Length: 362
Image (cartoon, rainbow, N blue to C red):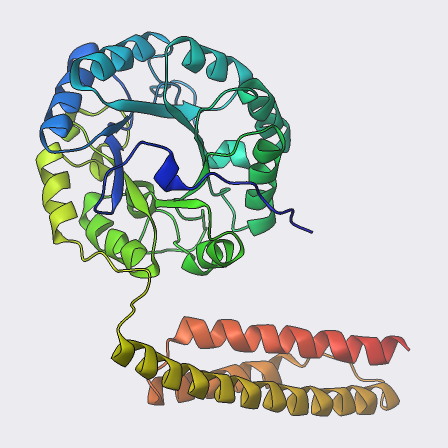
């Protein structure tokens, strides 16, 4: 069972100024002092107060550019001093944390690959103990909300209260529009459990190319995220890593100005009355859905009993394919998303199989 987290609100970190979105921006990798300082200058001139840059880069294949190393932290220190920026980078080990502390890094984040490893998260948490450095945790590579929460718990147990998450999407074998599948529902579930957490979206890694960054950023604003971590490089075409997903500082500012930031709520009486009426209708429909699902499950159990008496296997593939084809056709008629309906009915089918398996196992 997930533990309650003791969290310091984002508004008390002293990092960001209103209005939202809170923005963390900078190059995927610190490559040269000139590149980092020029990017920092341009971001500062455009009102960005928090600079990010990758110092150690976890790459899939050896031989790729794996970051400049601790030397880049000196450049970040210089950018902090010259432009008054807060500076942050990714850490993946105890050694990284100690180097960041030594060089005055203001905030760190834990990458998706590291989040999947509880041993490394614990090592990082212990290294950060007794510091006041905020920590952002990227979602694990696969959509495992408990693994994500577990990383937050480990950090919190070591006294780290300035905690937040970065939603960067999930790896998938399926052919898809984005580099990483958003699976917004996982982040929404986490937000519903821990509304006090700082919530950032990383549309750069989610998109994989800057063409899709605006739509993903707007989706994050629609959901109610606090801010964005966006990759920005003074000359993206020459970037040593993730060139396609990096904006110039000017492009970044243009994108930010294009966003509509949603309020978390409204005190308007007309809004409150309208939303309450619609929510009441949803509550009624939800009750009907539960009753209908209960009736369906009862029929599935009866089918299971008949199959047991006749010594017939639970799953008939052709029957299930026929059902799925029928409901997807209905989804088209009613204007419902096919992937959504497929997911719902596959879950219903799985539950029915489990119920029938119980009967056959009695």
